[in-house]
Length: 132
Image (cartoon, rainbow, N blue to C red):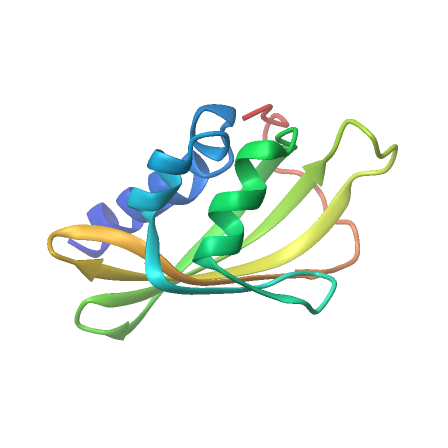
């Protein structure tokens, strides 16, 4: 069961990397909990309303994620830890980060409740660099 939930949460997390989801306020609304909080690399805190307004207007970056780890925080609450590389079209150098998302099961739907990415040193990319 843990493996199935881990795969489900990885699929949901990586769906948030895709242009189809990032540019759709309706899709983002389904995946992000109403009490969502994000702490950006800048140290600025964002809520769901801000994310629904901002993300659909941005040019989606390419993101590669790897080394996923699932940690249970409560029966219907799990933390997904991973490493990511993000490339934005307007930036020359990729940004490497350690990421943490907390997912909560709300009415049979997993939703992201919290997200934080912290910049880190470059690391070896496992497998091919994906362009999701």
